[in-house]
Image (cartoon, rainbow, N blue to C red; front, side):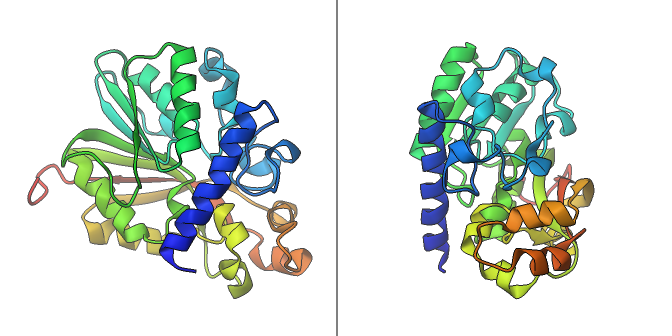
Length: 283
């Protein structure tokens, strides 16, 4: 499958999820055929997405923002956002992390959300309207080609989206470009340890479900360093067990039991940190 074909598949799946959430049909999911039939999140099972946000964080957010959450972590908390900072969320979906970021950076700061799916952007803007948040701007575009100038933001976050890209080096390069010198890269994503079975890597349904496209942790660190970041770190937040892996694989057309045994303990949600050098060349 080409990169363009993969983008079309991702756009179709996430667009459908946004429509279903907007219609009140249930929680969004990028892994199942119907958003109403599965638990919200980038994986097919509750262990991926349960308890990512505290009730105190989400109490003032629209219900649709919560139901459209497709993440595997809480980058707004882990990024340690400060008042006055400018934040960019790559693949912002229904906008939950953008709205939470806007609250953390306060009126002197700003939060951008970038998404390529029209339906998700419409949902996010409606969530912004309902939340009454002013220091937010949602942008249409691709995470491989960010529509912001060099050095425009202090922090880049993302929640279970980079793994969906067919050109991850380009995504990381763009993140580096739009960060100011000394800026922080702080994302939640699915990461793997060691090699996954080839049948799993080839399965596009699982790619769109955040598993098959996940980077191996050493490769993730290597790519971050190669595009210019310093001190790349990967901190596991959840490591999925056999039963979790079997749930990931359900409905994929693969031998779920056999493959689950092969991937047990290798698939994890993780927080990925890195820093743009304070005196980066060309910054």
